[in-house]
Length: 230
Length: 230
DNA sequence: ACCTGAACACCGTTCAAGT
DNA sequence: ACCTGAACACCGTTCAAGT
Image (tube, rainbow over all chains, first blue to last red; front, side):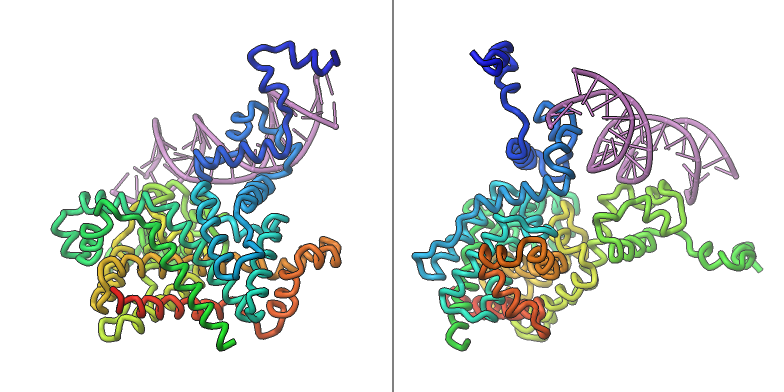
């Protein structure tokens, strides 16, 4: 009955799109989706606008620069990472949040190098940091050890996720590189790379990701041991 | 006496520049220098050309795309990383090369996210990989454990170096963020971040880099222990 | 108020032309 | 052969103008 209802009813094909007004959130969702499929290299405001079906300049009404869009996208990803539970011991809780972080970065491969490098961290980012630090402190770690633990765990998690996100060009192409060079030259020049590649990485069951928990547990156990001599 | 000698002698101010013909190596050196001072964000072929005193298109004669330039720059950095010695035990040798890698990435902060993400690794890159893998194998690690060790050490080293390279906007600005928000609001919302920041990070002696050796040694010791159950 | 197209100052790269 | 300027197809962003 209202004019709004009337308007929405006019269009047939486009009505679904048209009723969806542009909002900050809708823009950021579309931005994350676009980056997920195109990667950050090809992520441009102009393409984002086309994906949303609006003129590029329209976006500037809700987010005032590309940097602000990227900030918002990083916040979306932080929102997807499970906060450490307050009911578990610190090691279990932190372990779970690290696995959750890797899973989120697996869904959004463009995000790994951006998570810790935004000049102005948003509330989801800060809230996440606070929960992790709080969890470590409750676990009995001193401030010094908390700082160490935080730095090394995040370096590892983000470093690993980033490495993983660029892998298709690093393992798969290893065969290509070997193919481009003369096979026997490659073997002579880089015998250990060749061995590892042929006898392990190329084998059916291999998954680079398996190393994640291996390394994570080394760090967690090491931190645990360090609590004693704190 | 030769015409070449004659030519070189003509100019007075510019002769030093002019005699230095453009070469692949000279371009790459200038590229690394430019990225060191400007960062990768501002690194453009056009600016590189101006720095070299040539027309932009001239560069394409020696390197056929920006990607190829970046590949070359990464190779330069790999060349600066100390290879693991063959005379030391694996732990000492690998430890040294990890410290050397961090030092190199400290000199070239733009490089961390590029080292392991080039589609086509160059000879310095491959040679480096080969030496590290060889060192681990000689140390008695199985192929499986070598793969784990390699993956987690590099994730940590590159992850940490990257984190470190973006730090000025992450620690310094923490004070700014707190200043922008109401101080008491910040303290109420993020009490653990505030505590860590005030009682540790802001203190005179604090250096984020101290966590590097802490984490590195946890990983090395953990790998060492894993050799037994291999 | 919300949305827009034209324009500006940049990119990387191609091309045709200079020596 | 080496080097070049003009031009092309893109960027992010500003601006003045539409409703």
